[in-house]
Image (cartoon, rainbow, N blue to C red; front, top):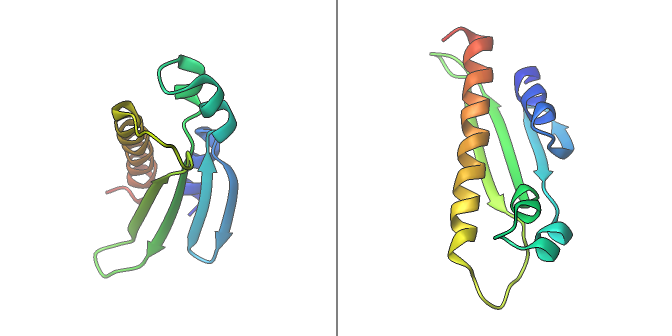
Length: 107
């Protein structure tokens, strides 16, 4: 769990809460994303996301489960770039967590 918490801190995730072997966190800013939009760098860097990460024990070793959801709120028109921003952010988080947990468990 320390590897997960350390990874979230290194990636500047905020509002990190831990309940037993589950962590909830969020990143980005709805306001900044709305003000700057998906096509400008300041908006893209503040793409709002929420995540829940759980660790469960199993016979071969710990299993890390992650769910990620966009948190940009309601929009009248959905822009195709938002799907790409979400996919990139989720992939970056997954890669960082895989690297951190693999280093920790030695697998």
